Length: 92
Length: 316
Image (cartoon, rainbow over all chains, first blue to last red; front, side, top):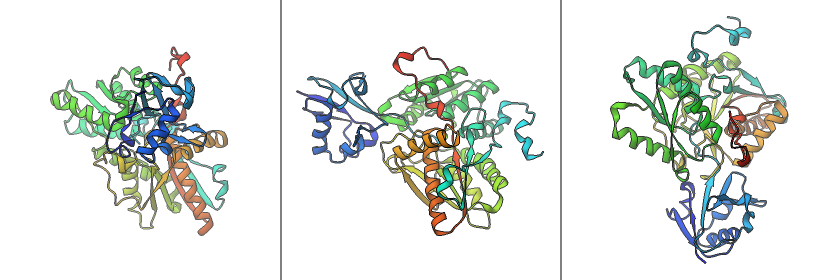
């Protein structure tokens, strides 16, 4: 099982500048736990005690995991996970 | 003119509708700091619905005055929304074509509003955020510099000047010398820079506090986490006396409270501003037993209503 995770610019300080990282776990939640081991701090940026933070969108392929099975969404080899903040920021 | 009649004045152009926005006392939100006056300047009363009308108007008028906008030129800039709406309506009113570059994850109503004025939108990578949009617009302009007027709101001194000439004096006119604290967020930093520059000219000290998102990854649209962003050229770190950091959740929850307790449906950055301003007011109440805190409500919350998947025919 190999999946890729695209990392948005604001989180690349945690991934040593990488815009894409690899994972092997079978669900979105397990992938986040797996990445937390290599990139400490990533989990808390994405999740709170209730699940995915309200302003964070996680996609598997084109689908928002809120419309799939959330963190339990199962992955298959080759899936691409994308993390996108709900907004773009930058103009007050 | 009598102050009560300011908003009923007769005007000759949509550009003249900018400014003279109301200052509203937040009585209910401010209950936890009863000895302190807490005010919000309601920038959604501008014709484009946001604080960005001020900067856009000033940048266009200053460029027209000194010949930076040639005949047949197109205005192009990067914007996550409100500045784009402002460019779009002033461009329409002045016969100036407008192109906007924005990350594709900006809310659909924002794109639709700008398009309603005839503006063309160019999308940049959503993973690159507003900095990606800035880089793309610079590439486009570099290829054909004569074709474009690029106001570059992050670097244009007319942006803070709009607030030095407008927002600052209007606040002083409305609350006089009672103001003790001014609180607003950092995006392009124009509101903070220009207003603070004016307020710091007063003989009596007014403490000016900047608001930033607590984390690099955040959901406070319009605000910038400066440590992880391209720092705008107009930003002068010596102007704010201090900076407060607000989490996305605190900003969003305060936006909800403003709707339910004050009848003010505001955007998330305004929620963050009021959250920070209330924290300042509560501290003043505890330590000073009084004060007057003014903050900025940048826009209305309905600008962020995004249609759900089954509402794709939803029109604005």
